Amino acid sequence: MNGPRRPGGSGPSPRRASLARSVRAVAWSLIGLRAGKEYRQDLQSIQPLHVILIGLLALFGFVLLLIAVVKWVA
Image (cartoon, rainbow, N blue to C red; front, top):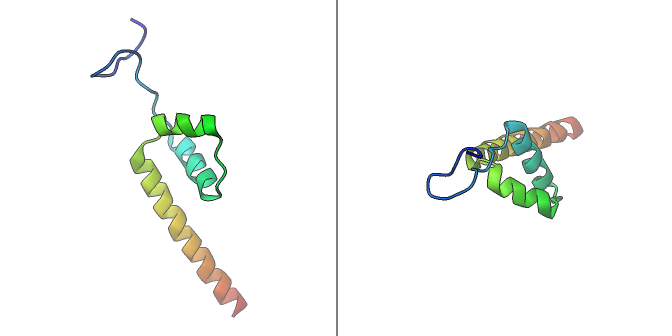
């Protein structure tokens, strides 16, 4: 017994990424810097719901930042 197995396959199941790793992956993706090896690991471990939620929060924060800058300048 080498570890948990996937229901339909052989071998250990991929480890799920933490929320912090998801935040880091989304942040690097937003600025366009992702290493190939890290990208492939993230594809296997990051939960899509985390990516969607973090992306929406980042978008909301960016819009608030733009509004604050416009009010400060105007």
